[in-house]
Amino acid sequence: MAHIGSCAEGDTITAMFWNGVARRGERVFMREKELGVWRSWSWDETAQAVRETAMGLASLGFMPGDCASILSNTVIEWVIADLAVLSAGGVSNGIYPTDAASQVQYLCADSRTTVLFVEDEEQLDKALAAREELPLLRHIVVFDTTGLQHCDDPMVMSLSALRDRGGAHDAGQPGEFDRRRQCRQPQDLAILVYTSGTTGKPKGAMHSHAGLMHSVRGGNAALPQHEGDQRMCFLPLCHMAERLGGEYIAIYTGTVLNFVENPETVPENVREIAPTVFLAVPRVWEKFYSAVNLAVAEAGAVQQWAWRRAIAVGEQVADRLLAGQRPAWGLRARFAVAKALVLNNACRMIGIHRARFLVTGAAPISPNLVRWYLALGVPMLECWGQTESGGAATSMPFDRIRPGSIGRACAHNEVKVDPATGELLIRGPGVFMGYLNQPEKTAETIDADGWLHTGDVGSVDDEGFFRITDRMKDIIITAGGKNITPSEFENELKFSPYITDAVVIGDRRAYLTALIMIDQDNVETWAQQHDVPFSNYQSLARAAEVRALIQAEVDKVNRKFARVEQVRAFRLLETRLTAEDEELTPTMKLKRSFVQKKYAAVIDGMYQGR
Image (cartoon, rainbow, N blue to C red):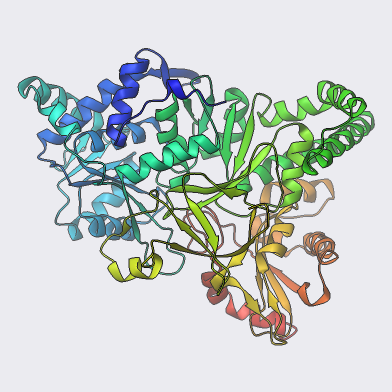
């Protein structure tokens, strides 16, 4: 499985990258789409860009240990800037491109950022709005200068200009680059990854080179990749999942990174890329599932009949595999026919027809969704970890998939359940160094024995499979004293193609209610098919027919739960939310506590019959 001999080793992220360059040279490292054509970056070409950028930073007075931040969407320049900062001996920090200017100011101030990389004019505007309160910020480097031809701000320069400076500086300072890239030790701080701040100001999780390398090796041992693999790079690189699980593991293994054009073109780009390894969050997998089922609903009678027969065979195979049994020869033969005639078409529609396996994480996923992808013939492996754990701490084994479980502890760390509280704890060399500038928060999170307190409540069975039941702070205790884990109901709701997210409410209340966010695309299609008039998202959410549609979905889920666990009333959020809205985290999850405060009047209305 894992081509260990082809992995680029090193005791720091920087050493790993440069060892990869020496090993792979003209092989393709990254690909991006420019003007409709895919353009490849070789390892050597990337190395030249990284070296010039690093020496450009050196020419600006950027010193080892200084911090540079990157404010950008997921583009190739993000990777170049990240590796250049590390190669210059610095600390690299990522900022979500959806963050407002005030958030950019806070993150740059907290991290003591001296150089800020920004993607384009939109992100530059945020940097310029924040810089008056950032006395340590000396330079702003822009990746894409479209629309900035007349910008003559002395603090602002293009990435191209920085590279030119770096080339000249490199020529005049022989030996400096090698000293720079070798100056940091494994125990030194490498990157900052800020938490999403669902319960207050974001906290900067500090990760050392040694910790990251430990997690890279462990992550690849759990989910092996190699130089023949193709990955799609589209999740935020400032998030731990794509930073470590995408960029750094690709450097280690030689897997090719393919960058999407923008977040809106993911469905199109995944079909073009056809990744062999695909990491995504549950929301993406839910979207693909909905797209296939809506396509089936719009197909002719013969196609619908063929789909029902084929997916039924796939589900029989999935059930055997999930039970740890090998399907009988006859069933395997029927499954081969179903795949060839029908199921492979669904995989091609999604873009997963070449995938060896799918990986899901960052949020809970419905067990039914895992079973559905397995019925298509593609195993989906759930993993679990946190920013603070340095990537995945548990992973599902290939030969024993258990929907509803987050798998077993990865070999590179320990995981246990606190017997007193039920909290899941993690310990290992990949666990973070602590929170920047917040020693008291660090002490609350890592105990004296080195255990990371995750805040997730769960259990473990006799075979070592862990389950998460909820976040400690999210458990609902009803007025009747019943303990409810709202995520179970919420995950079932999100399995509906018409529901994007939901928050179940009921702490100290007589019964449960829910705030629901509809899937605009799918509900709009449904409304058009059923002649339901609407003009915008708000009118769609207010339509009586749409409410009845969602009521039917809630009723389906209610039938799976005991009476006390059922949702008695719900309201639809009438504003389409994006990552720029305060209700959502940058990873597009509803902030439970924030939503409950903002919509307090709406929630009270559900308990007062309004």
